[in-house]
Length: 286
Image 1 (cartoon, helix red, strand yellow):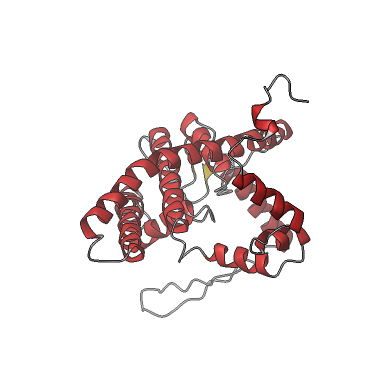
Image 2: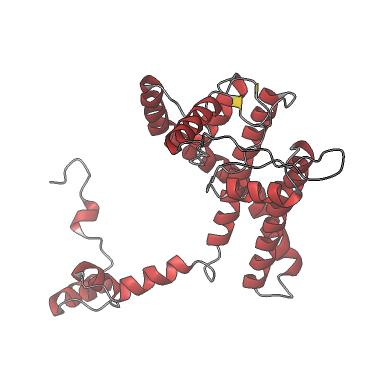
């Protein structure tokens, strides 16, 4: 790619400088791009031509570990060695289920004050509104907390800390991260020369874990409303149209048994004496 330069002389007449005769080959350009990508994976900034902090610092390692166990997976930093890749596989196999168990346990604990809030709303508004509308009000309160504490306010913080982010970019990053999409186009703390980068990564990790837990809490409150849980409709439809004889028998209304069973129950109901099974000691029963 050749750009001609046209400086001017003393009489302001344009003078054309002959371009270079050698053009850049496609193979050379591809090799250069490979070197740039290789250097970027190891913490070298191709834009400012400087070497920043290493990608595998303590804070960056914690941040990478959190993106693995929470299944966010930004993909901007990856293990390059075979041993590192093998360890990442083993770590994900054990780390992801344990993280889900931890988040589920935290959600169970958070459901206690959430249920108390719902009970308080029922006591205050139960005589005015139906339970469904009170549950909608309760859900709206939880959603407002989620949007305010984990989307709007953190987006403002990231927009002030990241030099190249505006508020929309920061809000986009928070949403993509808390929904575990993790596209990896915006990563906090990767700007060259950013101060307190390890601490910044650790605080971002804490934000992701707490935000994911509160997101799961919001989903739990949403699914607890039968009118909004669409899955219950599909489950009921599948039970109605099932061909399993056991499910069909259980779904049918209770019917009376054979005649001799009715007679036996009727005779026993008239007698005041207990049955032989009831008077026989436990140790003497066959």
